[in-house]
Length: 178
Ligand code: SF4
Ligand code: SF4
Image (cartoon, rainbow, N blue to C red; front, side, top):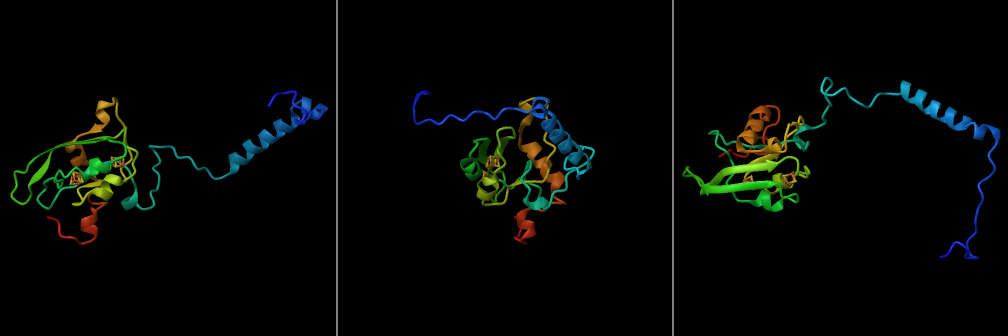
């Protein structure tokens, strides 16, 4: 459509009065909004001095952990289901023959790129042995990209830090831990 098309109906801006030219209504409007926010309830927190209240830490999707079994061994059996389900392709597993007689394989290496992760929880859903879970741990900081790739040891240490306040699903459901 061209600008001179006869079907176009052009509407002129109404002429601006004196107060409009002085931006007075907009100034008052802006000031009213500012004053209103000064006295309204604050929704921001002074993190990390103030911590957010997490409704239910069990269903919060924060930093991952690799769960341990009753003997303190990593529960992962290197089935690769979590890596297959992961839409962000941020899980990397190297499986190996298990040194223990009660399972065929275990993860020799297990890394998650926490910067690529979208915290969807699909890995947790996919795991058949309750070995990977997301926690309410949200202090996710690092000085380099490499530091944000969590390896097996780091993921197991998150389990140690969170297991008391957030028992794993099998413990909560009373499923015997292998
Ligand atoms: S939470 Fe989602 S994106 Fe992150 S590792 Fe698990 S499956 Fe992948
Ligand atoms: S964490 Fe679970 S789903 Fe992922 S490889 Fe290990 S056992 Fe399989």
